[in-house]
Structure formats: C-alpha cells, structure tokens
Image (cartoon, helix red, strand yellow):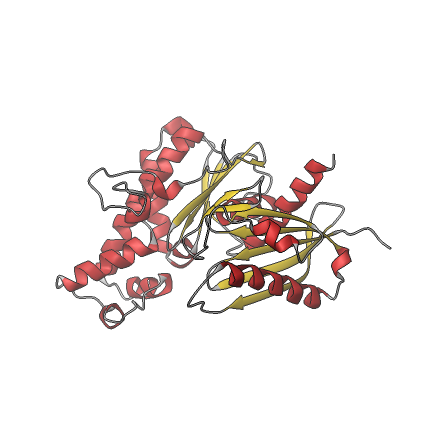
Length: 333
C-alpha cells in the first residue's frame, strides 16, 4: 500500500464551510485534488453541529477527489476564535455556542479519523495560505489583516507563523485607537472592531440614516435584519451616495492608523489586506493604504508593500492544510 500523501484543509464558519484536498508536488506546489463547499444558515449552532459539519465536508471532499481515506496524511482545521494549537482546543468562540471551554475539537474529530489533525485560528490560516501560494509567496516577514464583519490578523516572521506565548497573538481588532470611541464587546472603548469592521460601518450607516441623512441604502437599512453587506456598500458608492462615501472613508482612515501601528512596531516587508470589505470596496482599500503610508515612519515603509490578498476565503483552507503538514513534519523529524 502506498504511503499517504494527501493533505486536507478545512475552514469552517457559522454558515459556511470549505474543504480542500491537495497533494504537495516535488517543486512545493499544491495540486488541488478535490473540494467541498457548503453554505447553510445555522439557526441554533452547537458543538455537535460544528463537528458533524466538518466530518461531512471532509467525506464529501474525499468523494470529489476520488481518493481513499488511507491516502490522507494530515487534516488541518481553521476555525474562528481563540485556539490552543498544542491541545487542539477552542478556548473561546462566540459563534458556535459551545457548551464548555476549552472545547476539545481535535479529540472529537479524532474519533472519526486516524490521521494527524491540527486546529488553527482562521485568520492565522489565511496568512499562511497567502504566504505559501498567494501575495505573500517568497516573503519571509509579513502581516495579513482581514477586514470583514469583524477584524483579525496573522503574523508571519521568518516564514513561520508567530502565534505568541499562548497562541493568542493577532488580535488586531482589539487594538485601541480612540479612547473615547464606542464600547467593544471586550470591554474596552475605541477598538478597531468598533470603528472599522463591516459591522461598525453597518451600525454607522444605520445611526446616521435614522438621524435623517438620505441614502440609496434606505430600503435595506429599514429591514430587520439589515440587508447590508460589502457589495451593497460598494454599489452605493458607485452611485455616489454621500453617506456611504463618508462612512467608508472615515473607517478606512482609522484602519490606516492601525496599519501604521503594525508597520512601525513589526517592520514587515509586506502587509496583505483581505476580507470581504477589502475584496469588494476599492475605495476602502485605497484610502486605508493612503492613510497608513501617511502615518507610518518613513524608513519603515521604504521596502514595504501593502497589497490585496489574491486567494479570498480559499486562503484559509490552503493555510490549514499547510499548517497541519508543518506540524506533522515537526513531530516526526
């Protein structure tokens, strides 16, 4: 029987999951063998649904790749929340309504698979994916920043993930940039999450609309829940909607402060911006880059590039697969 060679990568969210199966070629390239994608609204999330969805998605990807389970060497799972990589547990993740922490995700999944399984934070996985096959390829020191409904980050130093002393590094969304800003769920005021994220922009749009400012988004802002996403905001900007323009420009300017702080503190070679806000809203990306370069120290930006990610959500699945193989090799060498 041939030795197992395939790597599985899974990125799981509350309402979506994406699983890939890849083979690492001799030149280091990752060849996609099969995949499974599913979007399904989960009304009452719990730990059973979380584990079963991952199991089912891996099974579907195996079928799509037309391979056997014994062909698989490693399985990497990327999940939102604070992760203990060594223990394979979720320390905290409000999305999934887990009954107890730490939640032994890897142990639960290990009951269905014999392969080496690794759990990693989804933002860390995105950074690893972009560094391996995306806009960070061949860049040894980079920071990946995700701007979506909330905000996250991944730090790559000397080509390896920097997770911090307790695997909790990268909480970019909780960087405080305004002491008098809105209160965050973490208890602080003025975190980037409260000023820059898609949720923050949605809240600002709604508040100002209710105060009487006109907008082409009026009909969508009157719905419950709000029918607003990054693409809707882009459409409003394309129609030269003054409210949407102002909200986006202000949020992007504040993000630039956060990016400049990262540049001045870590001195990376590259900052990669991802997430649906970046992918959909050109103005947001352009203004954020302009703001960051204006505020960062000159010498820290001489060899720096700030770019958009190229892999979208796929980066997380690839990153999870790559990280699992790295952990496996570390254990066996």
